[in-house]
Amino acid sequence: MNVFRLITTTLVIPCLLSPLSIAVAQDSSPKQLDPVVVTGTYGPKTVGESLSSITVIDEEAIRSKAPADFTELLRGQPGINVTGNGSFGKSTNVNIRGVQNAGTVFLLDGVKVHSATGGGAPWQFIPTDLIQRVEVVRGSRSSLYGADAMGGVVQAFTLDPKLGQRGWIETGAGNFGTQKTSAGISGTSGNTRFSLSGLHKETDGTAIVEDGENQAFRNTAGLGRIVHDFDNGGEASVMLLQSQGNTEYEGGNTDYTIRTIGLGLTIPVNDYWRSGIQLSESRDDEKSFSATSTNNYNTRLRQARWENTFSYSNHELVAGAEFQQDEINSNINFNETSRTNKAVFSQLRMNFADIDAQLSLRSDDNEAYGTKETGGLALGYSFDNSHRIRASYGTAFRAPTFNNLYYPASTPTSFRGNPDLKPEQSETFELGASGNYEKWFWDLAVYQMDVEDLIINEKINGASTPVNVNKARIRGTELALGYEHNDWRTAIALTYMDPEDRETGKQLRRLTKQTARFDLDKTIGNFVIGGSVIAEGDRYDDAANKNKLSGFATLDLRAGWKFTPNWSTRLTLANVLDKEYSTAIKSKDLNYIAAGRTGMMTLRYDL
Image (tube, rainbow, N blue to C red; front, side, top):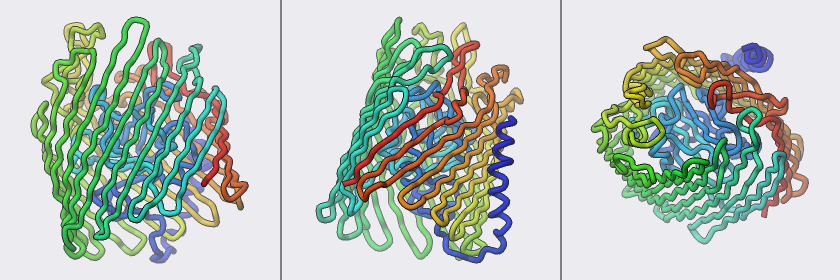
């Protein structure tokens, strides 16, 4: 794709050559750009210590970009493909390292959120304004998180009540009839912190197919958190988030409610043993209306997790157990409406001076498809305080969804489930190297994933039926760089991926081989200006590689002004060049299209 080559040649390559040319001359400076993360392992580690490929999107980046949808934060990041059926609350898929949407685990403050019927998370309904931080871990993580963590894990952290914060109120408006208002308040009392926040957003939307009508979206969300710190170092917390509203699509509309609640308790038993328990429930309720039918799909996921961390010198052992139950309530008469999963897990983290080692093992016993064991091994070596290499191997699996297993053949959709399906299974090898310096960092990873028992749909007795047939091989290279100095903030992400169906030699459906992202922001006194360029290569909407979707590049611009200590305003312009592009096809000769040029201006008051 010419535009992809142009951007990587004129913007990205010069930025890479400049810092890389001085890498050898850097001394062993502190790792100021190596943030602490919790998703890559059981417990807090820096990105380097986690021995994983991780992208962190912090609060400053989220507030600066002010994306219309949560997945706009993920688009173009290393190893990530985002596809959607239009803009503003329309169905969206997130693929990490070529694994389909249902093979990506989404956590909200540690609570798993997904649809048991279709698989994957309701990305389009996650309220970005209530998110403070995002961690993306790429690569197999079933040995830590169980089923579906084949491609990786995305964890979003909600707004955390902090000492000194009191609250805010923000309002904004943009084109397409978009309006938004959000507000929050927080406080402390002794060792207890609390916060309440919410938002309401509505838009007339845009056409999601050529010559179509505008499709509206409405969202109201609220978040409450209470955290109590015990004098002995323990912590108790409660989190409740709800997002609800309506989204329109071609031929109908959907009422939706996403509700997540988590209760956590962590206690230091002694100097060497820390124990924690988490109880959670997440709900995904959707009721769709069309001219011919009304269907509701209400799914509920309950989890109980007990985790213990034992420390000795520089080594840690984590061991625990987990219980999970999925339930469905629908007007569609599914052959089964619930299933349970029991798991035991462990992870050994060892440090020997410059060498780190991690070993993880997990066993899942699922009521629907039996027992699956997964494991992971990672080794890392630090040359000095700045340079590290790593190697890892891991196995993972993706569970068949309720639609895959239990959808009844009697419905008029010409689709039926297959109760004999086996989970998809994979093994992944990865090599990586990284450098962290006082003002900048780089991270390079190469990997290969082999997938067996790939689930595809075949016509059997006139009905589309999921079966285990194909094998896939996905190879890739990912490069990420970041730079912070003199109020400049730069992030660069490059991905090359080869997702191949081993049975046919074709490129896997809806996956592009090339992506690039370039973010640049500058603070000038009370002003912040910035922009992002995101480029994606060609992709195919079908397994036979006949329906091609052209690559594209978009430009986003943003500016902010804090004109008093408490007041600030922000302007964001997305897709400034009004590029029309598609990442999915609705039907023959009819593509889903993304929104054109989008503008939004907000005014904020901090208490």
